[in-house]
Amino acid sequence: WSEPLAEGAQVLRRYALAQADALLAEIENIAALNPFYHRITPGGHRMSVAMTNCGDFGWSTNARGYQYSREDEESGSRWPPMPALFRSLAVAAAKEAGFSGFNPDACLINRYEPGAKLTLHQDKDEKDLRQPIVSVSLGLPAIFQFGGFERDAATQRILLEHGDVVVWGGPSRLRYHGILPLKAGIHPQCGAFRYNLTFRRAF
Ligand code: MD3
Ligand code: FE
Image (cartoon, rainbow, N blue to C red; front, side, top):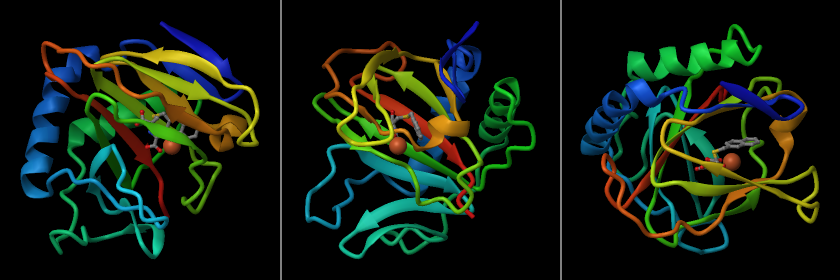
């Protein structure tokens, strides 16, 4: 089932549940080639979330700023290709939410350990902001904060659980959002972690 969160934002609860084990196996394959690591932000802070990517482009941050690039600067190699299962799930979810023709060229994979968080931010490094972002949550549950168009606007809190998919498009695309510090726990498939896939059209 699905529910609108705001204009352009649609939650597809448990949409990826049947594919969760296969998605996790693909994450393991990707991480074996390009391991998760903690980026350092332009301000010099080590991010509590560890990241890797797959697809033609990957997102990262370093002292020079934020960017999408073809190579992982840590390993020097190209990002692993986006698995067919990843692509088909993202394309189908986008279509379900009214964004037919979504063709992601980047998938950022975030790994949260207990205490890891993502402070309120906007995603605006992509070229065409009319393209949605599709997110897939796996593992431990997290509290997602969904704000407005200014950092200090009021936020709503939404629990994102294993298998939940959210499509963020239209006016919701530029809303501030974040993840509160992850509460420790053990998930049967993911252990002490939460994973989040975000599918994007970078260029
Ligand atoms: C709303 N990730 O990677 S997914 C990110 O759970 C990011 O790891 C969070 O924010 C996570 O940038 C949240 C949900 C999400 C992703 C992108 C959005 C919500 C969004 C872009 C615009 C508005
Ligand atoms: Fe984001």
